[in-house]
Image (cartoon, rainbow, N blue to C red; front, side, top):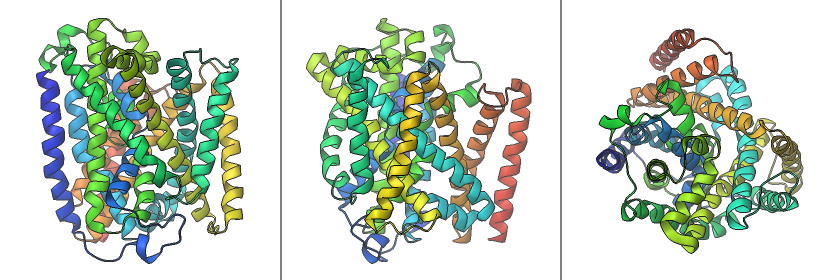
Length: 477
């Protein structure tokens, strides 16, 4: 329990201190934001700070900060330290800077920002990866909440032959279509406060339950004796496994989406930085719940590694009883739904921007959305019908998620250098994650399948090259 509490202190105190440092580096002004100067009633819509903050939290907190940390705890209690440290100096910094840079550049989405600060060639490569990421998120975040609802709420088997599964998928699909097309304040802005209340109740309920139920948490100095199965190759596997709970490229697409509804730059720290700290809290809570459930024998290593959604139901009902457990599970279902809808909305905006499509015309937005959802439907059917389908989707999603973060950290570094800010703040997490994504794709079964020693060496060379290029770009800036 001591390691867990130390991690919470790092997250809360470190977030407060480093968040202030980030804010001082950026120096928010009272200049009119795009939400006000470019108001169009669809995507550029001024909204209140509390609503923007809640939308940002729900947008970024999909199943990643739950399923990832649940599996990440199999690497041992070191997760209680790496999650908060990475969240404070990596994830929250990344989200805050991206959102604020977008505000200062007419609410441009991440592909446009990458093109502006890194050039056309990198933009083309990045745009392919980020659009693929948004598409994968749309599929994954229909699949996982749908299966959670079927298995834990109505208690049926989530099999391809069960028509209930497809009905539930269809309902989520229909909601995504509406949320993608309607003005952001008409559906997302109105329904999210309800979702937010459920989210907070479930997260706080599980957190309190860890202490009330006395879930056993192993200390970092006892990790070797506890024999956690995934302690080998901690780098890169841990960081690709936990992904959203530490640093997520997906978050940049959501920060730029919300940047179009922020009416005052001084709201940025709460809306972007602090909401990532809140996600870090969710990640820490579920990592602790997973470790405790493992220690009590409520689950096992195989279940956590292959069916983490099952662990969610077991933990929620053990801690909070039948009724409270259902509320907690609904809170977990809400997370991916409120990320999937805005992921597909962001995909529509990014593709529209890339092909210069005027989406204030409803016909254009509708046609583009139809094309996107046809592809989503095809991939979803394939993933459900293939035994390895979801596993492949999740691995590519995790890698693409971190790869986009590498690009965005580079964009932030160049922006900070051009504006006389301490850009090393962006170079450090960017270089680290360049090593992570390179090492993973070089060694993984979905990648080049090289031996680990070779992967480590090549990843190191690529990461050094990444850092050198950023410093040289910074000098030119």
